[in-house]
Length: 184
Image 1 (cartoon, rainbow, N blue to C red):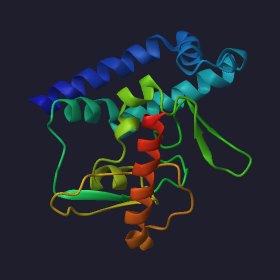
Image 2 (image 1 turned 60 degrees about the vertical axis):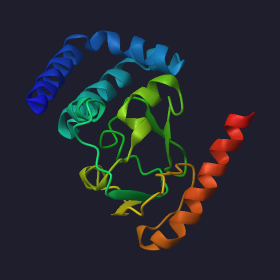
Image 3 (image 1 turned 30 degrees about the vertical axis):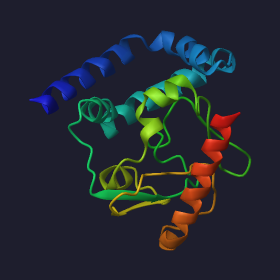
């Protein structure tokens, strides 16, 4: 029942997204605090269409709702790795807030902000299924060790999933970085 409701809500939100298409560049500019979305209005509209298509393809709204209702989380897995900034998890590189630098590294226009934390972005990846869904080259899910807390650094670049043993060191470094930021 929860799955059907989540899917229906997702289809409704996607329909509203298409109906409100002309307003999306204004919303993107407000959320990101970047008027460039308005200056590049036609390009932003095209990116919003890709965003909506990626939302539907990934079923991200349904997954988000099911996660918030406690219907999908699994505790038997630990996710290890570090983000390589490929952009796959950003709605298959279709997120309106996603951009790339000169080296091809992805950059999120709302990273770390209130909206980012509310979306699935702030929790990604929570399990093996999400890693596989987006064909993520950066993270792997391994059986969870009892008493270990999930820590995922997303600032490191150049992680190879083959090097899962080094991920624990990177995870600890990420936790220390977050603790230091909170202490400020």
